[in-house]
Image (cartoon, rainbow, N blue to C red):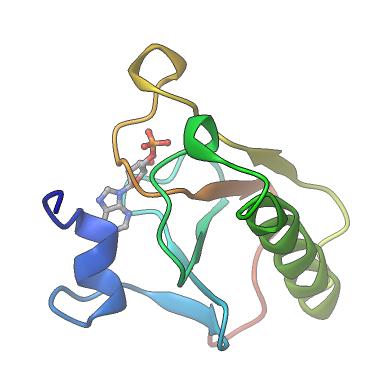
Length: 112
Ligand code: AMP
Protein backbone atom coordinates (compact mmCIF):
# COMPACT_ATOMS: atom_id res chain seq x y z
CA UNK A 1 0.00 0.00 0.00
CA UNK A 2 1.22 3.49 -0.84
CA UNK A 3 1.80 6.18 1.82
CA UNK A 4 -1.29 8.20 2.73
CA UNK A 5 -1.13 11.66 1.18
CA UNK A 6 -1.98 14.92 2.94
CA UNK A 7 -5.42 14.73 1.31
CA UNK A 8 -6.05 11.26 2.81
CA UNK A 9 -5.29 12.86 6.19
CA UNK A 10 -7.68 15.76 5.51
CA UNK A 11 -10.40 13.25 4.57
CA UNK A 12 -9.87 11.25 7.75
CA UNK A 13 -9.77 14.44 9.87
CA UNK A 14 -6.17 13.73 10.91
CA UNK A 15 -5.24 17.21 9.80
CA UNK A 16 -7.60 20.20 9.61
CA UNK A 17 -8.79 21.92 6.46
CA UNK A 18 -11.15 24.79 5.69
CA UNK A 19 -13.93 22.63 4.27
CA UNK A 20 -16.48 24.49 2.12
CA UNK A 21 -18.48 21.53 0.80
CA UNK A 22 -18.90 17.82 1.54
CA UNK A 23 -21.21 15.03 0.44
CA UNK A 24 -20.95 11.23 0.04
CA UNK A 25 -18.69 11.50 -3.00
CA UNK A 26 -16.58 14.60 -2.62
CA UNK A 27 -14.83 16.96 -0.22
CA UNK A 28 -13.96 20.56 -1.15
CA UNK A 29 -11.67 22.77 0.91
CA UNK A 30 -9.64 25.95 0.60
CA UNK A 31 -6.14 25.66 -0.83
CA UNK A 32 -3.65 26.52 1.89
CA UNK A 33 -1.59 28.62 -0.57
CA UNK A 34 -4.29 30.36 -2.62
CA UNK A 35 -3.36 31.52 -6.12
CA UNK A 36 -6.65 33.40 -6.62
CA UNK A 37 -9.20 35.23 -4.46
CA UNK A 38 -11.04 31.93 -4.18
CA UNK A 39 -8.88 28.82 -4.57
CA UNK A 40 -10.53 25.52 -3.68
CA UNK A 41 -9.61 21.89 -4.15
CA UNK A 42 -12.27 19.26 -4.94
CA UNK A 43 -11.26 15.67 -4.15
CA UNK A 44 -13.20 12.42 -4.61
CA UNK A 45 -13.71 10.25 -1.53
CA UNK A 46 -12.74 7.28 -3.73
CA UNK A 47 -8.94 7.45 -4.06
CA UNK A 48 -7.08 7.57 -7.30
CA UNK A 49 -3.69 9.27 -7.50
CA UNK A 50 -3.93 11.24 -10.71
CA UNK A 51 -5.64 11.78 -14.04
CA UNK A 52 -2.75 9.66 -15.35
CA UNK A 53 -4.22 6.70 -13.44
CA UNK A 54 -7.81 7.01 -14.70
CA UNK A 55 -9.19 3.74 -16.09
CA UNK A 56 -12.56 2.95 -17.66
CA UNK A 57 -13.73 2.00 -14.12
CA UNK A 58 -12.76 5.38 -12.64
CA UNK A 59 -13.36 7.63 -15.67
CA UNK A 60 -16.49 9.06 -14.01
CA UNK A 61 -14.46 10.65 -11.19
CA UNK A 62 -13.05 13.70 -13.03
CA UNK A 63 -16.48 14.48 -14.49
CA UNK A 64 -18.07 14.08 -11.08
CA UNK A 65 -15.60 16.60 -9.60
CA UNK A 66 -16.40 19.05 -12.41
CA UNK A 67 -20.16 18.69 -11.81
CA UNK A 68 -19.73 19.25 -8.06
CA UNK A 69 -17.62 22.34 -8.73
CA UNK A 70 -20.18 23.64 -11.23
CA UNK A 71 -23.04 23.15 -8.74
CA UNK A 72 -21.05 24.69 -5.90
CA UNK A 73 -20.20 27.75 -8.03
CA UNK A 74 -23.84 28.23 -8.97
CA UNK A 75 -24.89 27.99 -5.32
CA UNK A 76 -22.24 30.55 -4.44
CA UNK A 77 -23.25 32.90 -7.26
CA UNK A 78 -19.78 32.58 -8.80
CA UNK A 79 -20.09 33.08 -12.58
CA UNK A 80 -16.44 32.92 -13.66
CA UNK A 81 -13.83 30.41 -12.64
CA UNK A 82 -11.01 28.20 -13.85
CA UNK A 83 -10.82 24.43 -13.31
CA UNK A 84 -7.46 22.68 -13.54
CA UNK A 85 -6.02 19.22 -13.07
CA UNK A 86 -2.25 19.05 -12.65
CA UNK A 87 -1.02 15.72 -14.00
CA UNK A 88 2.24 14.20 -12.83
CA UNK A 89 5.31 15.94 -11.48
CA UNK A 90 6.02 17.50 -14.88
CA UNK A 91 2.48 18.90 -14.86
CA UNK A 92 2.96 20.52 -11.46
CA UNK A 93 1.19 17.84 -9.43
CA UNK A 94 2.66 17.75 -5.92
CA UNK A 95 -0.04 15.81 -4.09
CA UNK A 96 -0.63 12.38 -5.59
CA UNK A 97 -4.35 12.28 -4.80
CA UNK A 98 -6.67 13.33 -7.63
CA UNK A 99 -7.84 16.92 -7.11
CA UNK A 100 -9.55 19.60 -9.15
CA UNK A 101 -8.31 23.15 -8.64
CA UNK A 102 -11.12 25.75 -8.62
CA UNK A 103 -9.88 29.33 -9.01
CA UNK A 104 -11.95 32.50 -9.17
CA UNK A 105 -11.51 36.20 -8.57
CA UNK A 106 -15.04 36.19 -7.13
CA UNK A 107 -15.58 35.61 -3.42
CA UNK A 108 -17.52 32.95 -1.54
CA UNK A 109 -20.62 33.96 0.36
CA UNK A 110 -20.10 35.06 3.96
CA UNK A 111 -19.40 32.17 6.32
CA UNK A 112 -17.64 30.04 3.69
P1 AMP B 1 -0.93 20.21 -6.98
O1 AMP B 1 0.28 21.06 -7.20
O2 AMP B 1 -1.88 20.20 -8.14
O3 AMP B 1 -0.59 18.84 -6.46
O4 AMP B 1 -1.75 20.97 -5.85
C1 AMP B 1 -1.68 20.65 -4.51
C2 AMP B 1 -2.26 21.81 -3.79
O5 AMP B 1 -2.52 21.42 -2.46
C3 AMP B 1 -1.34 23.04 -3.74
O6 AMP B 1 -1.98 24.14 -4.38
C4 AMP B 1 -1.15 23.27 -2.24
O7 AMP B 1 -1.14 24.63 -1.89
C5 AMP B 1 -2.35 22.53 -1.65
N1 AMP B 1 -2.16 22.05 -0.29
C6 AMP B 1 -1.10 21.37 0.20
N2 AMP B 1 -1.30 21.06 1.51
C7 AMP B 1 -2.53 21.55 1.82
C8 AMP B 1 -3.32 21.55 3.01
N3 AMP B 1 -2.89 20.99 4.14
N4 AMP B 1 -4.52 22.14 2.98
C9 AMP B 1 -4.97 22.73 1.85
N5 AMP B 1 -4.28 22.76 0.69
C10 AMP B 1 -3.08 22.17 0.68
